[in-house]
Image 1 (cartoon, helix red, strand yellow):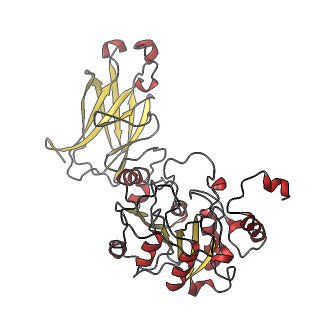
Image 2: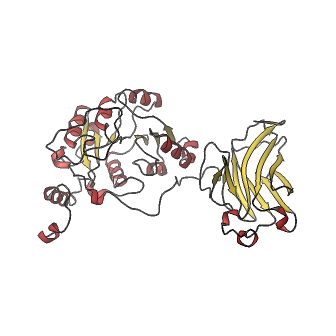
Image 3: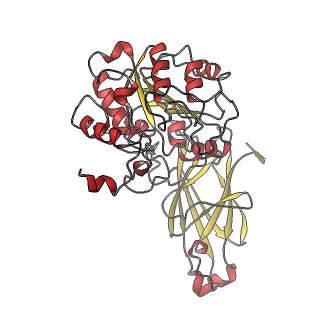
Length: 413
């Protein structure tokens, strides 16, 4: 890079760190050149992969806190590689999103999720209750108290610790924010701890600093008994520091991520959205799930559609389906019929005589072996909303399955 190029761009942290990075990219013991993004915020996925290529894995378990909605975090992609673990997230809204978007992993017991704000006072109790003493990964991202939380942790012995550091401060500065359990990051530099402070803490706890990522966001510490001569030395902030580079802080990879894609549980192919407290999930032949007046609306858009029902109690004698036809029946010019095939074992046919009501499917003594049961739905007609009700909203094209309940002798179970 010539002087003109330097003068025409933003050099985050200064020329010294830019030149140091260029040299490191040519040395395979440094980690920056291995970075890539799958679901991590930046290039952490690739660095994690490279570290375990060198030190190996044991139980493929992780503990990560500060994951937001889980879509963009350090351990999401590991769920697709046979790993399991614990996420801790304090914000209730983000926690609810995790429960919905990662329900398959939760039901498969690949993922546990706890809704708590982590403090120095509760972290060891949380980890003790979880019961994993030697996870492969501990990832700490709380936007402020990271140093204090790691300092407080005892009783577990992770092989790799990933922790955010304050890249504003070069390696000669040993600084950390004062502990404040109610801290919320205000996007200023008064947050976290410098890499030198993290290096010293890691050494005290028996960990070697092995690298930082190119964006200057995360530091990687490997337990000292595992490092051998696998990483660049000296294991100091001076050798491994990267400044915060906001110009490369937004990585892109592939299409927009909305949900966990490892969703093939018990034949649930094509299910696009998960609501763990609801007992029906729509698949092909439906519009995207909506919520109206407290009900989820699984709106049929094809003559044949499929949904999945779950958590059926063994005592149930009937399945009760709440439906809603979106146009007056008189406009349909003939009877509207609907047929349910439940798990290939029970069939029920109905002629719809009311615009909104209940359909009761008797299942008698039939017992289904699986918890998640496919339901094939066939109807004899659909309608085009712009022609029939002068409304161009295609989501009105069909019958809405609003709710499914299980009944035993007239009582909901």
